[in-house]
Image (tube, rainbow, N blue to C red):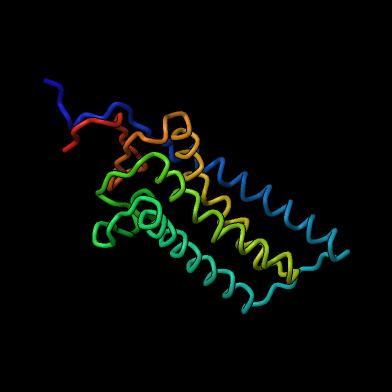
Length: 186
């Protein structure tokens, strides 16, 4: 008899590799956004003040929290996961914030939940920064887009599997357990 708790596939991301690619994405996104801003407004200027630094740091912390909350919203919207089955927190040992659930979701639903924060905490601040020509918003956008590197790494692996596979998130590690549809998973 087959053990119904054993996954058919496991996806685990390499955090040091993802962190390195995230830094590159942050740097290249920031350069790209500054170039686009410079082309739109025909100027590029920087003003460093204590208030600007505080706004950036505060904005960064707030957007990281919102990033994780948008994962939870994605679990609810796309995976129909009850709020009481969701957890948000920080893993200080790994140096990451996380949002997770103990419920199974379809591959299609979790892929949507993985990318929702990219759009809301990365692309939206980039648009705000470009519309207002505000370097703080452009910097925040670049950092949050680069910070979504782990989400994109998981998304990339999940795209290789059918939409109806079931996915269970590991509550402690950046790891996903995948099950073929039709299995009785306990």
